Length: 154
Image (cartoon, rainbow, N blue to C red; front, side, top):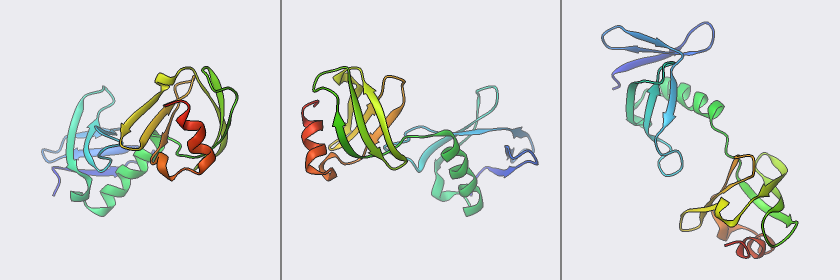
C-alpha cells in the first residue's frame, strides 16, 4: 500500500495526491538506480525539483499506478541497446561507430576509450560525443565480429 495516489489530470500530467490531501501536479518519477535496480527506489519530484514521495519497490504499487510510472519513465529515459557493431572508422579514438540498436541502425562518435564504462561483469555503457548513452547489456552475447571490434577498445 502506498502513501499516495497517482493519476493523470486532463492535460495528461501526473497528479500525486498525498494522504493528507495535498496534491502535486506534474510530478516526475526518477529512478535512483535505473540500470542496477530499475524497479526499485523511485522518487517523485515536484515541478520545483523537490522530492514529494518515494517508493522502495514499484511492485508494491497497484497495477494502474505502476503502469503510469512506467509510462512516464519510458517517455523520459531513452537508452538504446546496442545489438551489433557493424564497423568502426578507425581502431583509435576519436572514431565513428556504425551500430545496430533496438531502435535501428545509427552512427555514434566515440571521443575516447573512457567513454566506454563497465557497469558490471559484461554490461557496458557507451557515451557518444553528443552525450547520448547506449547500453550494451551483455558483451558476450554479441556476434564474433562485434566482440572483436569491441575488444580493441577495452
